[in-house]
Length: 108
Image (cartoon, rainbow, N blue to C red):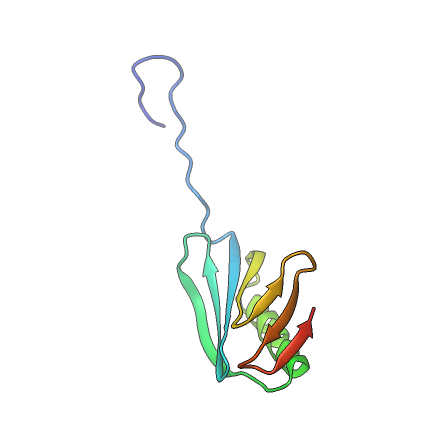
């Protein structure tokens, strides 16, 4: 408990930084980086993989790795996934439209 000159004593709160995790995916033409961070931004896991030529194969591999990381950290709730893409996204449809360096088109 804290001390205040008037009124109720303050109760100090803190963020439970290990309650939730956030995934980050950075897609590059040759490699893709995947990271898991806690709410304070500290990396709990970080790794790279080769970026497959096929978008379907890519989605399957990344999904599998994210599920494995979730199993490695079962105490956490997961708040979201941030993705960095080397191409255009249609904001109205939320679809990946075109990435000339990857050769991918129209990915949902």
